[in-house]
Image (cartoon, rainbow, N blue to C red; front, side, top):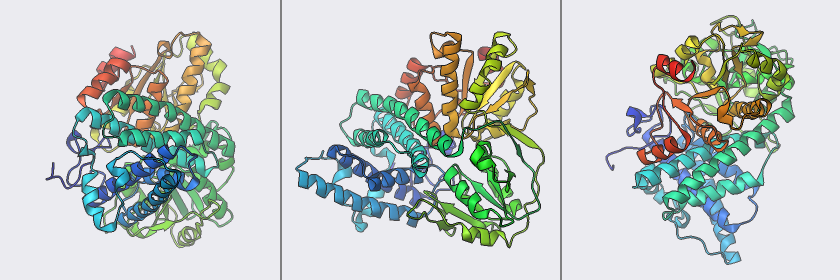
Length: 547
């Protein structure tokens, strides 16, 4: 495969359904891909050494691992210098850990990732060597990449929780253990399958940790109507997933005459009592991440990216000089807002710019309803159970996950429209933008689209399903009237899927296409063990799984 300028197959839109080899469909350049491969090599080395040291994971190591993995998620960081700075930081950590191991007389495994010293002259060659294609066996490569992509999603959720003060030594220890296992060139199929499935267990744990962090800081999400129109004041648009960032922004913009709008997966910020209390949090602007080019142009004010979901703009885009990045994100030419020693960010430059901008151009009007995380659903439990027992609600369909650009994703809108009127959609993540603005009505006052929140709030539907299992006295979670029809795009969706498998959920449908990083052999195991399947047509899927 030496003719490839790069190789990346981590997202659903990967070229030809097999892998991007010239430039990423996401816009990632070949050189950026190589630097990310290099960074992941350093991540594996740091994780492996830390695992063998068998001590607590320091804040410095934990911060490096989670930030580095998060920055390599699809659409997160396109800035070569930013990535290389993380490589440098990782190399210094490796040297420190290697010295510590030598002091303690700990023998380390003879893996190439651990031995490599990472001198700058070696960067280019090492980036080439560390492509995922370094593993020649397709099934071994598949399991290693499935685990690594799950770890990336886990790192993202862990970073959000840590920003709110919630941490877990157990999760960090597992991250290092998993990195050590997938770094081992002698790991066999059973060992790799076991670590992949164990990743799902810790996927549940990390989503529970983030749920605790969010609800402890901001209260339990509650049923909320969110404005999708605009006001007359200048605005700041905040995108991504990090709730700590929007809290900091809301505090700093209070009383300034600047309105704050959410975008993409930041929409669920409106559902939290301690965030919705800010009167200048006026609404949600636009749709899912992939429509941002036209929507950022019409917004008129500054945009802040707190996490992934960046679509590289044209060099001539008129909003290029008003986009800011934070945390693990980065883009060449965009100003990056650093975190201070106390974990806060200074948004004064964003606010100063906003005051010079026109108010957003209105692109739609109305309201959307959300806030149905597990606490809100439990508050309505008696009504929901009564409605199910009466037959008014016949089935629930979990349609969580991601939205994307491909026309094949219209399947989810058409599926939602075609569902019988006695079926309720349970959603989370940006997949909801395919149907959350449709007028699908309600059942005895219960909306037919129940939005729990962000992609990590898929955890809520697992909690709800387990509660329904208890209420209805079902022997198995799969005996409930729930069908899982999940849309995936990037690596946070991978950890959600692995978490659902750990909880015993079977017969999950995954689309719009199955992952390119799952080999035929690994797919057979997933199909035989868990009943994983792809989508068919809307008509056939409703006929076979709903009616």
